[in-house]
Image 1: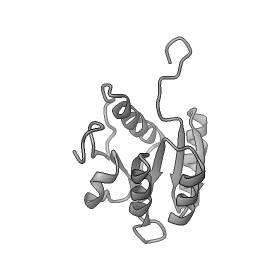
Image 2 (image 1 turned 135 degrees about the vertical axis):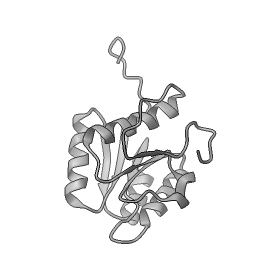
Image 3 (image 1 turned 120 degrees about the vertical axis):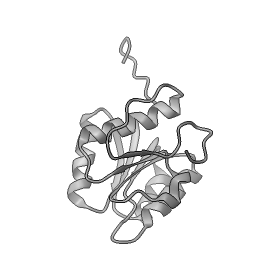
Length: 148
């Protein structure tokens, strides 16, 4: 922040995670880091409802929700609405690179999650990207990229 002004473009985040402890930790950490959590949901239907009723700047989505790849469907829904997506998953999906700005591999630290969000924010703002944490895969380096 410079002169008390927050220059981030990502303020409201939807967390899509079916592991309750991970979801709770992410929500608590993101709130503490100054983000507003628009919702924490565990499946595609709940994510679609949240995307329809909430203002969301970023979706953080696990790919494998309850053993299915519904996180990719969530990313497709968000992408269609022009909402940025960051995957957080055990295995980054090479077939969904066009739907997200990047992927943070599990397990990850809170610092790595924050840096990954800052990378997406920097892309959206068109500024220099922070150094990527280990386990982060960049899919799109700028707004015009279909896939990196």
